[in-house]
Length: 380
Image 1 (cartoon, rainbow, N blue to C red):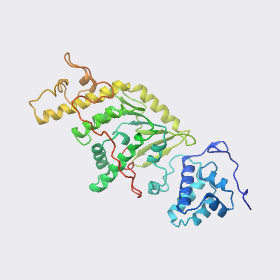
Image 2: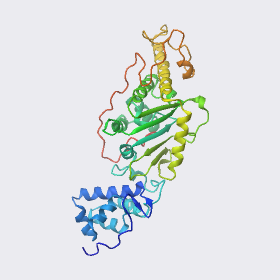
Image 3: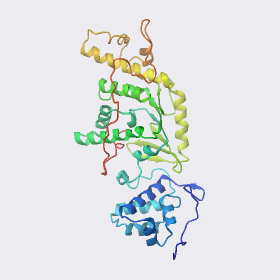
């Protein structure tokens, strides 16, 4: 084929060129260009012929084994009928910037909420392991419906029930990754403040804590609590998520603030990995963490009972004496068994008398609009 060997970059398979690993940015560009080609019903050979390329070269561009040349992207956008200037500018910018790391959303803002690009749910679906630290609210992948509703309303200050319901459905739909044939491992460290913050009121928070206990019983799910007694810790800079991806994708960290979302790639992800390891070391072991969560849930349950019937001082038969301590008492003290009380529930067990908060994740349908994907409205 004439010209089929012109302008071919020197590279090798495995997502590397010149010894460098392809960034997520490069892979997102290749993914989008492949989706545009498919949407136009064109094969690799047909699109490559337009470029006067060998089809194997275009295949490697789309998989980010080789960087996508700007001139080729420009020709293909014309071929695919992409006329929107913002979308064209974004894709062409990525061809110039495929090796940059960090803060790559800054220039294009809301464009990257387009679900055709790789965003937080995209990373969640492909990650082999998700490790996180939270000091404000329960992470989105572990939230119940009522808790998610309360968080989103607080963060967004939104009065539209329909809009909030849509965001809640998107968030719960993300949790379906744990029902797949290869669910990711999850290692979450929660600051004690997360467990004690009254999100949605005592009832909503209690059901959320019960759900955490149930979630910890899933294979591959680890939940640890970092108590106040731990003092200063490696997560004082704020919450984060670290995605450990299968080859050829690089490990990616995610942080969120009022300034926006930020994806961080190697080598800067090493700092997140070290911080998470230190946080896990400082946190309670898994079994003790679940007992800790259960003790706070018992405090909340007892508070609700007393509010309904101040004369009532004990819970259902078989449960420990109700709330001998004030709501501000530490969970460790509240969990200490009285002489006649049974020991705390075992790890992964919902305290007696409680009801499951969220046994299954609602099968919400993902939207194809440009609205937020359930990540924009709170701490993931």
